Length: 338
Image 1 (cartoon, one colour):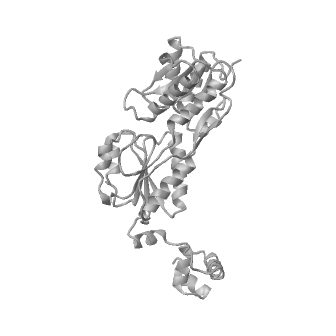
Image 2 (tube, helix red, strand yellow; image 1 turned 135 degrees about the vertical axis):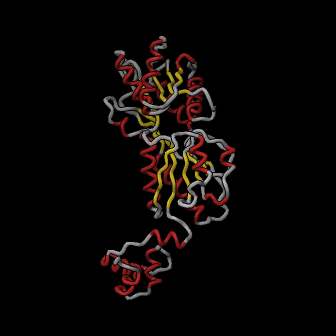
């Protein structure tokens, strides 16, 4: 038999209600009484039954996080941050993988698991605004992550991709780089993050008085290491000769650096490279990667807080577009040209 509230109350010499108030961190308990109950809890090794607590409130105690790529280190690191943030609110996270497919994103967002989750944090790729508007009021709270923009009444958390891209390109221009390539462009859906980062690339080059040479833009089908290597190889094969590269993400930047080395070019001596996401792998590559680092901890914390706030019925809480911060982390892959 596990230790119960009654056992703690008997040892502490207080009522079960008082123990419950301490366990649930209610404010109207004196410090002396809280300390007395806590000593009893510690002595008996009491652990609250979170499942029962949530069920009493008509909830499951589970928040779902749906991401497009489980194999992408950025989403793995973000998921870890969400799990930690949810635990601070006594919630468990159910991880879902959509593969960036619209039909799976629709299933997730329109409540096919509403009976097992209390709320959803979703990072969509193909989802359309009409899909969001099709959600029922009883599908539970939804928080969107990422840079797709929607005219829909849901909280949306995303960094300013245009400004972040401009920061990366500004860094390269300040190093004297003049032929700055962008790899990872996409041809469709102009509001995707790749297009926002490409827009930032163009805006900063223009502000720096540098030409926006479309020969230095490489489109890709995916966002992995092989895509980065293939895009870099294509640029070199057509004689683009960049002296710097801004990649859509760190995985592509790492692939691009491999292609450059295989062509006998030095990073950063001949070509400086900047990525995006600040994944752990980039810190331990042979040439540590300069990158735009989104505040993943803040993204996770804000997403969980918005879900929990809506579950607890915070009054007058309007849907918000929230922009966490980011920083440029300078490492070995960028320097002035030799």
